[in-house]
Length: 256
Ligand code: NAD
Image (tube, rainbow, N blue to C red):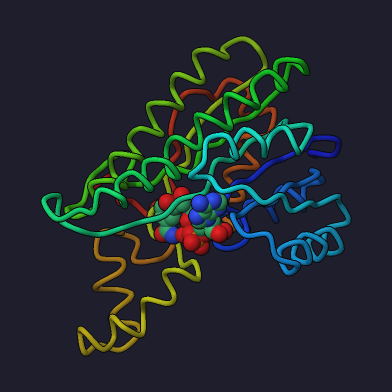
């Protein structure tokens, strides 16, 4: 039970971040959801989650590509017992054509944001003698694919940074781990299916099996609920001595 704990999940208005936020709220945590926009509907989404789970939920806008904004997110939240670094974007291009701007943006959002939020959160966790840092890396934090240079570099970086965080917090009641999902059917992935059906002249099931899940041996998507459940496990007493490591939720991808 996470009653009395405050959880901050970056990039959590959709997909995996939202799934993790819902799992933590369902377990009783006070939750802060985040994205870069600051619209009435963002705050309404927080109010909807608060209503659904009967816990305090706030939306705090912060652009995770901006280091000062990352730190300000933690300061505005005022407490951070559980930090889930989830915000991330993708761009697919060969190295010699990879736009420099995209490289810098992916490194900032997918990797450097975790440095800034962690730096701001650790003093709050140390003051309480308890904390959980859960970094949403990827199967691409452990293996590579062509044309995803920035993403693979950033996610490997997240795995390395997770280990350093764990070592610096060892014995302080604070753990740091990375979850490495394979393909998860988020709205972002769902939106690609119609285009892939046209390009490959395949039906939906064939696209899912032969294109999207080509490298996922289970031929099943991981779900946001499964990533949320894994996060909950890492927040439980059973995981007190699990730190500085990765947990794959990838249907066997990294066993290949
Ligand atoms: P998504 O696009 O559905 O969600 C991304 C979230 O991040 C959104 O809420 C978006 O608003 C937010 N975001 C984007 N840029 C931001 C910024 N600059 N500042 C703050 N918030 C920002 O994506 P998703 O599929 O849920 O991915 C979430 C995380 O999981 C990412 O780190 C991604 O790399 C990782 N991941 C996803 C998959 C997958 O198959 N979907 C697999 C492995 C890892």
